[in-house]
Image (cartoon, rainbow, N blue to C red; front, top):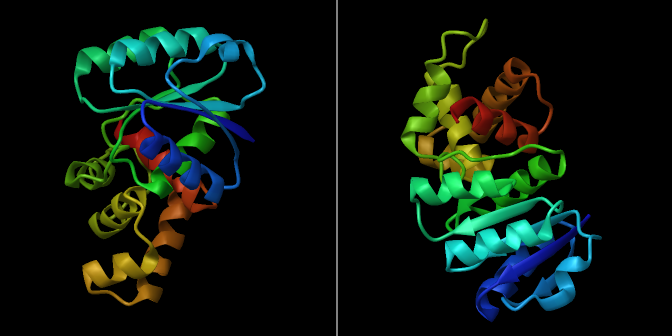
Length: 199
């Protein structure tokens, strides 16, 4: 998989390249002045991290049909809706965790569009919404939902165990049951499932 990174500054670009490189994706970096580079359609996904939402959406339109993940500095609903109309594949805050970004890119590469407030961080509401759904034949328990929310936030099993005062094996057991209920077989798939359920 090849990712294109478009960022305002060198620090942000280098950080994204490091994260994406660790995820096993080949990365091409382009500055804010793309010029003719946008005509290259060989990328599987583009990550756009520009301060100006208008410029970000212009890049999304110019790169089509390459799926674009827009990392934003604002949470304005109008900007999110504009990104959706422009054809962005995802809209997520710059505070997204490395694990969540990797899962998000995998979902986008699979053709999904993710515009959920739950993506940047696992707020308490995510866990609550997962445990309160009435349409599930086998709903998550409050503890399972809490652990899923922490997985979405990018925490490891060890970190989850420490924060919740549980044994690491207990966390693993909860995750196995949760994945079975969700019909998924990996943390990345669980992430996508959780985000889609809470959107």
